[in-house]
Amino acid sequence: MDQAIRSKRFELFAFGLAGFISAAVLFAVAQLVSVFFATSSAPFVALGSTFIDFTPPWLKDFAIATFGTNDKLALFVSLGIVAAILAALVGLLARRNFVAAAIAILILSAVIGTSVITRSATDSMDLVPVIIGTLFGLGTLKWLTGLASTGRSPRHEEEPSAGPSRRKFLVASSLSLLGAAIAAGVGTSIAATRNAAEAARLALGLPAPKAKAAKIPTGAQVDVKGMPKFVTPNEDFYRIDTALSVPRIDPAEWSLRVHGMVDNEFTMSFNDLLGEELVESYLTLTCVSNPVGGDLVGNAKWLGYPLRKLLERAGPQAGADMVLSTSIDGFSASTPLEILTDDRMALLALGMNDEPLPLEHGFPVRMVVPGLYGYVSATKWVVDLEVTRFGEKDAYWTTRGWSERGPIKMSSRVDVPRSFTKLPPGEVVIGGTAWAQTIGISKVEVKVDDEPWQKAELAEEATLDTWRQWRYVWKGGSSGNHSVTVRAYNADGEMQTSDRADPVPNGASGWQRVQFSIADS
Ligand SMILES: Nc1nc2c(c(=O)[nH]1)N[C@H]1C(S)=C(S)[C@@H](COP(=O)(O)O)O[C@H]1N2
Ligand SMILES: [Mo]
Image (cartoon, rainbow, N blue to C red; front, side):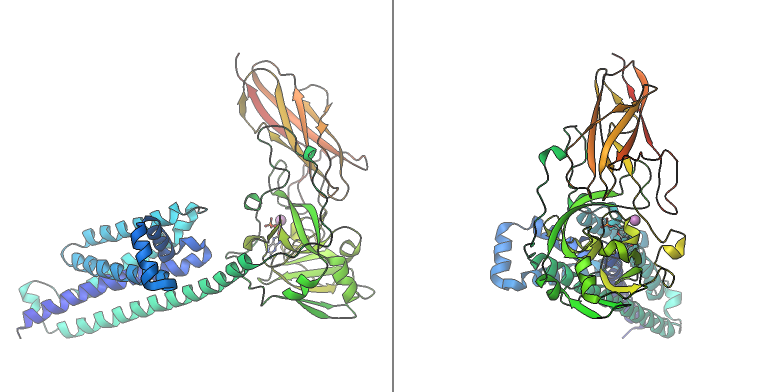
């Protein structure tokens, strides 16, 4: 056969293969990176779900009738075949015009990106996997098509270099394909374990508590438009942790080791925990990093086993003064033993607002301790409790400049109006929240401009461990700028300090002042 024809055939094959491999790299890299983002950020999952949304009912029925429970597999296989053919065509296009092929790939990524972003509960960060995948895909296309080209000018066709350049192309494409296979394999297996945790969470029926939490009085919520809900819904609950990718623990694999300065070391399984007498309790969790007026605070109903009882069973030895709780990802918190054994409701929690803990809030098990900032008490994905001494062990944040103890500082916040709101003339309804966990709030005062301090109306108290809402109706004032300052008193009669402190090393303090303005009448 004529050398020129053979070269041409090889080139067509090589460009088609380059297109296919580039797409494989794009998908595989995106799949791997998606492990760090929402499940729906994985390209196949996103494309597949979008495809299902657009499938006409007759095709759906046909698929279910033909493939049964393998209908999803059939969908993914068909998507894969279509993508492979399109990708090979893109490769052939690159032979004529690389820019046009690159644009075709960008269009493909845009389709994937659109499917990702139209899933509910995604944020724009979920586009990162597709974007990184696309960069790798384009890079691979550039690299492989560069090697695939044997040169189309007649003078090059006779060059003996066709041999080594083919070899180079074949080595490069094998390497790319191997890389894609590894990325896809690792990405898929991580996704499979995390899906196991998600599936287990969905299947989990929470046991009924031995003691139900007292009902929240309706008067705990003040009647002010724009106030946060007294009980924070799980999806609105603030999230703070050091976990780049949320740990996914199958409850069947979870266990908690209790050890250290104790008479009886033991290990507890998730089933053991389900068999214990569980209790419910409302508790307002607060982050030490919350600035004055900030929103790193949330209130939920927790279901769990009292840590007091757990530690009783372990039998702490004399001299122990701290419990170091460690999470599966290595985070740790140091909590005073005394606080975990007094009569407050420190819980080893598995439920949050009548649901199993959401994955990002510590599924399957975490700690919550009334009155302490999260960094010294609220270990999520907890797997180890060591009874020890403050003098002996340091927790995660303690070695990074934060105090070893972190009682929550009494705080009050203006929720309504928000800073720099422009209000119509007339009465101004001001609303907010205050907290002094384990002690309770007894009074809140507000000061508008330079007027004297006034008592706000307090909402009904739910428990001493929860925040308390308040409201104050100001008669209104002239058009222009105004400000409102707030301060709280706890049930011991102590006033919230006006001393300004930054969050580091043990929590912010100071009175919050909010500026707002009144429009011309
Ligand atoms: N495993 C683990 N648990 C953790 C943290 C963490 O980084 N890793 N952060 C803590 C901090 S600082 C806070 S404020 C609370 C926040 O809990 P949330 O994300 O459920 O609101 O979790 C605590 N538990
Ligand atoms: Mo925190």
